[in-house]
Length: 193
Image 1 (cartoon, one colour):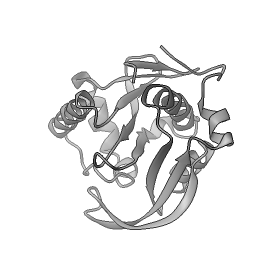
Image 2 (cartoon, helix red, strand yellow):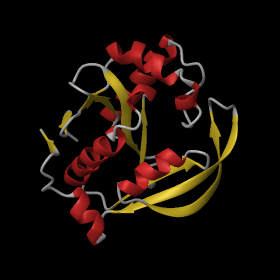
Image 3 (cartoon, helix red, strand yellow):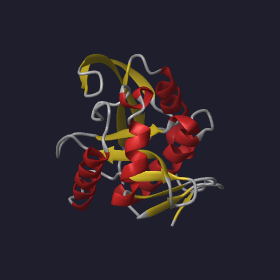
Image 4 (tube, one colour):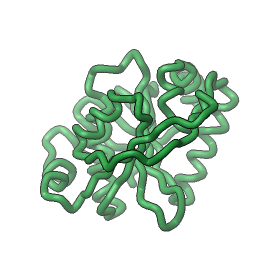
């Protein structure tokens, strides 16, 4: 996948160590951390630096494609990631957007641009996502991106909550006509560069 992805209002770029302070600040928000599986609460800067280095290493090895969501290419306002749990598993979408930027359509816009780039670069036909059952906002984002609810996936561990929580599975079939029109080249406002 390309290093920088542009949409109408956003720039998605590689995560950098210089993102650690804002990453830590935003993910130390209980409302962000509790909705993720892998972010503890609180998230100190040193832990964030280690997470960023780990994510960058996974990208170099082709195991994940983490991007900082930004307004202008500089300050991080969230993260969008595509990863695989194993060599044989489907690509999985994960993301968070900082609370000051909620309700502005940034998760959907970043997701559209990100998925278009993934389709183009990785030639994938399906993306999955898991959402904790008490996260209706994320479910709305996934539905707006064309994902279909495939039901309960059982309980998954949440680092922030230090416990297992019910997870709902979602799937995006990129071969379906509706997904093709939404996520293939041709979007006026979304382009990769």
